[in-house]
Length: 100
Image: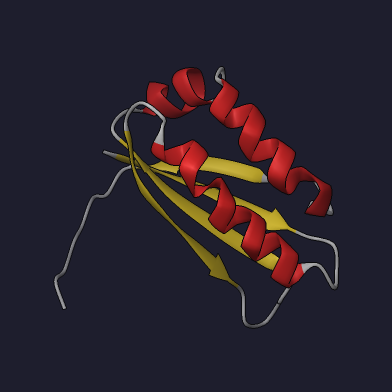
């Protein structure tokens, strides 16, 4: 299991519309091979900055299967108008987990 972390800076004043668009895009992610859920986090210090945390079974499920699909086109169609700059994306593996 990998986590995609996308840092997304959006245009000021479009926060509510962006959040609604991401919620709507959940269906596109849900139809995607290897998808295991996502969370959208909003920065407190920088309210136009978000981090989208997406769980994928494999790296290729994101970089090949999703990015090459109509689901990705649907996602970008819903949210890209809000971007202040292209998102910064990286992928991580969990190396330590401490239950609460």
